[in-house]
Picture (tube, rainbow, N blue to C red):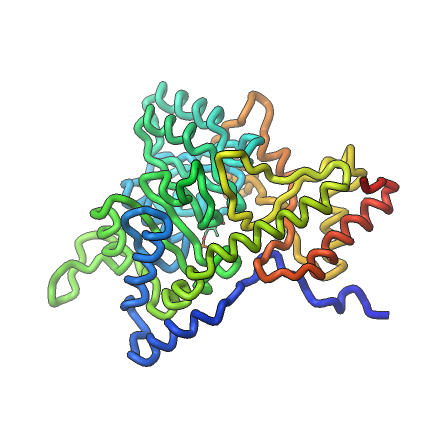
Length: 391
Ligand SMILES: *Cc1c(COP(=O)(O)O)cnc(C)c1O
């Protein structure tokens, strides 16, 4: 008998190479344009700008670096506060600390799992009353699902606080037909190995503000003034993307729409088969949004399903399948334990409910039907052991 652990490992979201990347990498090698910057970087920036409909783009070393640059450009400094979604990866908020500023965390709402306009409204009103408005709002589009951008943007305008759209997970998603990345003063993307397209590591800062993107490129290359000697007037960082990695990105970007299609059909497959299990619900996709379905996320209501997320995670692990709980809300992280948090409703923290019930399933665009069936069988197995009937 084959041991379950000897089955091929299924990863949560592995890289999916197209082969087209070689063309651009080879070009860079042939011309010895390895670093720094170069024609692939310029072209990748143009292509991302074109794809997202945002006018200007700066290719950088990571999504985290892109958020950091956005905060620098918004002049976030010590003593300032920045509002940020709580249900997200730590990288959304870490750059706030890099600037010596203080994050304030905003709860999710149940319809998109993203920043609750109700909680944001409360937080902004309280801050305005005290004369302590934040310098920025970092709004995340979780697992590819767009946040309620109309509502969030309306609040941003009323209070005059700019938005940084953390679109690290939502490249290829739409809101009212408009591409993710263009809903704030700045948008950021990540090309980390697990994202919908990858450069092995990298990120992009986008904005319609040409001057701001120019300045971002300057700061991201050690803030070197125009002079023959090395002269520096402000603090810079080494945050630019290399010409080789940008070449990988160009080869990947050509396949983005195909990757979105693949992840959406994986989601549809899960929905078809896992919906037969009572107590399982999916991260919703409101009508005015189109999600790239970067990761398929579900919640399990133990009272109905008869099993917990720990039980299913254990079953998946025993079958050599990688799955994860949804992000642990940042206001619950030891790193941020002194930070303020605003709930969606009084005494009702949606992000905490989602964290206690939510898991992310393998969603790589190169996942096979056999692999999907292996994952679904784990669910059926656990469910049947609990004596639950699959409808
Ligand atoms: C991946 C990710 C980031 C950070 O991107 P890196 O390229 O890994 O630095 C930021 N925010 C969210 C929501 C992410 O998922």
